[in-house]
Length: 385
Ligand SMILES: [Zn+2]
Image 1 (tube, rainbow, N blue to C red):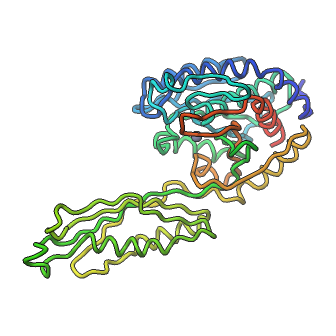
Image 2 (image 1 turned 180 degrees about the horizontal axis):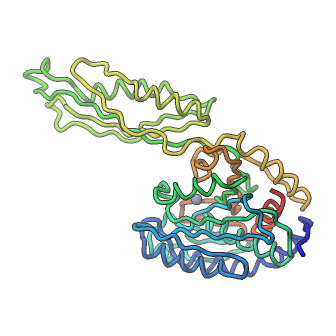
């Protein structure tokens, strides 16, 4: 028999599990898993599979040619409803090369826990693991199948996992993304900017800068004019940013350059703005006679718009209050795999993972006592979604 479980009870149950959570977290953090090192990532995937292997769950290894295996873990309550599913999404890869552990070892100091990938996002995976175990132990009634997807290449753009994430999201009613929360208050990321990268390549005509300047078409001058144009597209109020982050071009000062290139970072909060920027970008025309433009790239992750997270965030807020907790929300300038799922119109709540600070830096840490709280809230959401 399964029972509805009081959120307070979940919190109590998980509060007692903190030592076990930290023990699992240590194992995971000490198994380094850089996105770009397949061997190491596969070892971590195997370890993850072993900690997720318990009664009632099905663990699948989705082997990848160049990346670590993705893991799909399915928990189907009995009687399993045929269609309804929830997706819990995260990645086990980190931005640190193997050996980083020597410089930033796993350690617990007061209420903080340090180590590579502890915050982004191994603690999130541990929270999800214990959330599911608590639901099982309390015999909680779940009406939907829950799929946990742990991928290996989020930090490098999710090339090998994107299709899988989108396919799983499409058959889910909601997606919970276990990416880190923002700041010490653990703000959920209820909106994320869409992110892209474009290249503007200018083809000009080379000539001697002193003897025959009239025969040249200066690609660098043209690029400068285009960059000045792009700069005017920035609109902080609407959350649009266009940043020329890298420029290349020229050979010598006395040569009129025939080629120049800029690499541009693009961000937007709304899908409409994203499309408008892409359109403007591909409609750019050269200013200087004799030059030609070649435009490549565009947005790679669409924005996670607030409207796709609002309802889930409100539900999470009300469950949190039943546990005596308060939650908050924020907009993130960076993208995650949650952008993919929200762009499909699937309700998505991101930043559901660990509370801490310093992602992608040697000082990254989580606040240990928040692990049971976040896990309990996730468990409550799985029961009430
Ligand atoms: Zn992450």
